[in-house]
Image 1 (cartoon, one colour):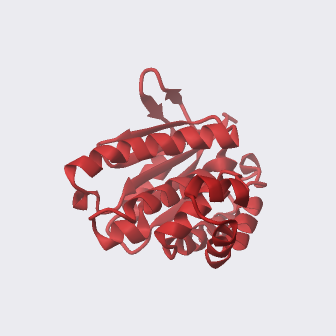
Image 2 (spheres, one colour):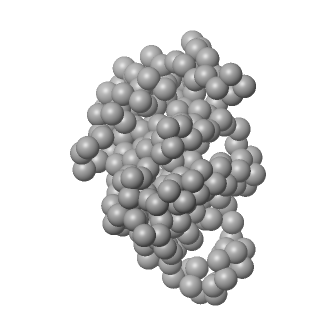
Length: 224
């Protein structure tokens, strides 16, 4: 079997509600998120912003896809909290689709991604566009019950993130990167007790537990 990759396809919700200046700043936010993820998690991936408000990421380790998707979502929600934009953008940040499968071409220098994983992610993102859903997971597997279980877990965790405030999203963003509460307090210029309070109210324990289970999945055992 070919090597299994994880792909995230996402779009920023209601990006047309952003001013021209803020839309240009969106690129900086996404780039900073990618830089943080690579630095703090030591993960190797290729991510890009296309068409101004669409995001594509390819990861050689599919177990890290959910963490990266949530990082992007929390980063955008935290950033949008102080902007003049739609409530949907502030509340939801991004809509994302995770696809796991083989990839025929992954070439950052030629700016080309091609393969089963990105087809799955792209098709599923189109499927939920215009609906009330903001996330979906998919891969080709014999065990449909397992696929459904993983998808439900992803959707439930995404729904939890949808309920967070901008300030809670900022805290969870840094916790997803693995920073401790003291480090986060210094970065956000708030007290450690405020970090702890926001993390607890945001449901950090559930987020961490779900990610721990997801990141133990050996997708090679399931993908056809």
